[in-house]
Length: 172
Image 1 (cartoon, rainbow, N blue to C red):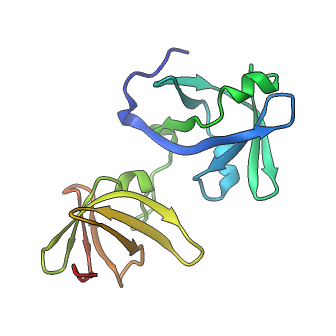
Image 2 (cartoon, one colour):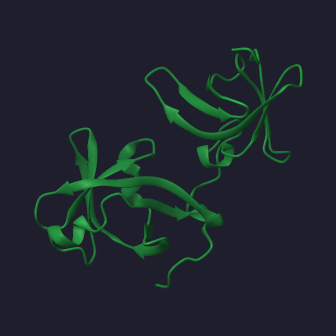
């Protein structure tokens, strides 16, 4: 398969975080929910040397609190070591359409965030999960962390306009 030059249609679903054993297995930090779903997507695209390169998962499983995989053609620890730190992406088309009122994080990143009074708080840089709820990192004149709580904090998401409306005090 050829390298991918245009990353605009890609969604980052994880990262290779380490080595597992001596036969080319890799530890994966998965952004999917549940985490083991990352193994079901294919092909993966790995960002190596600034280029997206397709790879196929030969085998994968849950290992403790993480996921480990064996990639086709990655047969020893030395080959696997070259991949540690690589982002893992898939083509956007590989994801199913979200249910109404549900969003992929990748769809929210880059949205403009305004509060109910119309104050521009910045742009969604990224999201992360906590035990209680997901958190939105908004970067503007300063960084803000907003809980992703629909109805309470998150009032409206308009993907067409690229705007998320929130009930949030700009001083907080």
